[in-house]
Length: 218
Image (cartoon, rainbow, N blue to C red; front, side, top):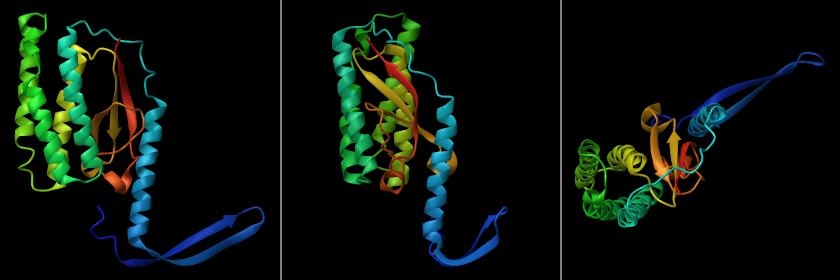
């Protein structure tokens, strides 16, 4: 959205106080790049504020009824995921590739078969972990950050579904959202902290976003 934002433009700004003073015009030469960034930041903050007004209050602690062996492994998965997110925040392609490879390795080692649940539910979990692994397998092949971030978005959505289905004992996960990612289509990610560090924009709009949901497990 910033490709054509590097020419200067003459901006006319009008100030008026109808009760005491007539309108006053000021002519300012403002670099349009600066103006575009300011508008983008305002749009992000405005969308987040409006959405935040209706955000649900965090629910009481949820149940995580499966074995500690599974949850220890899932927490290792989550740590690798958070490392991937942090690399994308820094726009570090090499670090992101390494984190994605680590995440795939831990995802493939997740002891899903140890989950004591009915076969249809277990089949859904197995399908989700397989899809996450398949998406990560192609991560390094994405040639630019935009492609890697798109892949990360898909992994984030599937990983959130996995956590919702099995829980993560003793942990809290924040489901966060940026309304401006991917040309204002919006995108989610997961975090272990409530603060916003946007993996889709990094330093450009580091704190753009909000927490949409909080999963807190006993």
